[in-house]
Image (cartoon, rainbow, N blue to C red; front, side, top):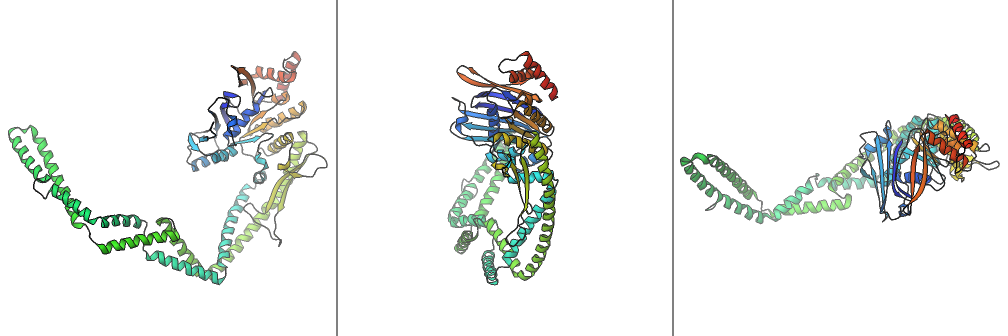
Length: 560
């Protein structure tokens, strides 16, 4: 759930932090105070598009932070781990900075992230139902997923997906094999030629680096010989060499120690240095003696390097991928050489997999149709209770077929699924995404969410002015629905209806004031008494009266 939201330099918000609670969180306040702005800010944290106009006047940047509790949310933690983002505890921190030059920075748990990652994880955490906001329920794939979750067929759907992937792979391989004999033989000849060319080079992954080193040594053989010879001469094989001078110094120290033994340690040290110098001398002598002056070998190395370059130009950008390509065509040759045998074997397997795919897809389709009828009726009943008694709701489950009448299989079965609704008498059913009324859209989403509460795993649901255009009595009905929904989800709802606000578990009052010629938005979490006073204000206008206060207390009492 959403624990904390911090906003800095966003539109008319200077700086504020809101600590949300479990259950139903209600936000109220005068029009223009900034209630919806808070929801829009959360949308930006979750990956919505932004422009510099949202940055508060005279500020260099806007900073938004949200802290979520992800305890028991294994899917989120698995997603974080797969991207290398730390998730050691139950807190998940989203942060987004938008600068005046249009740049944006995103962070998840302190790790630099992408906007796409914010969106991906955000979709699992929060569902915002604003009058003009993107609705996750409008996506066809989400509608199908919710239907499957509600009908408890999600596992069957996943099994079909796995079988379909194997079916598709096998079918493509079989089609390749069934190409004309001429094409197959041409491919086989080509692969054999390519493999022979690569294998004749006798390559390994270390060849290229080793060849480059050998080429450098062979082209610089004379220089290397002279350098190593001079080093050996200075250290050992010349008058006044290092070894000769160290030997003389050693004898002098020994003579000195016979008179004063306080320098015995230095005598031992110089003996070690002398031995190490001899060892180094031997190393360079051996290196000098092993230097190869071999024009024939140099020519071989140059030819091998050029051969590798040509092979990389033809087949792969680097030696590792070149060797991998060789493995691939080796398998293809094996595959094509046994074409007839493979075709027979694959056709049999494809037939078995196809039969299983059809059987399970039909089973899934039947269950979906039964579930769709039940779910449609329940959602329609909820809509009626929410003041949309004339609405008709229907879930289409239509089996897709081709021109020959065979089923078109895909990763989710054979069904095209879409939620449709008609909000007025005489209107035809149309897809959910075509419904234009904001108030109707919010109530429709509430109805669907209420029915699908157990199936929908999104922890935080946000309803921006779900009561738009509705009367007080309807606000009380919506309040009851939200309270029921808040048993399975954290709910954030902006409202103008006191009847709805009375059901809050946590109530926030949003206001704005002018300070030093700047408009500032503030948020106050209300205790029970202040909550009653705010509901009284909503009932009676600017000034509460004894009547409105009494009415407010009664609404709160009824809501408990």
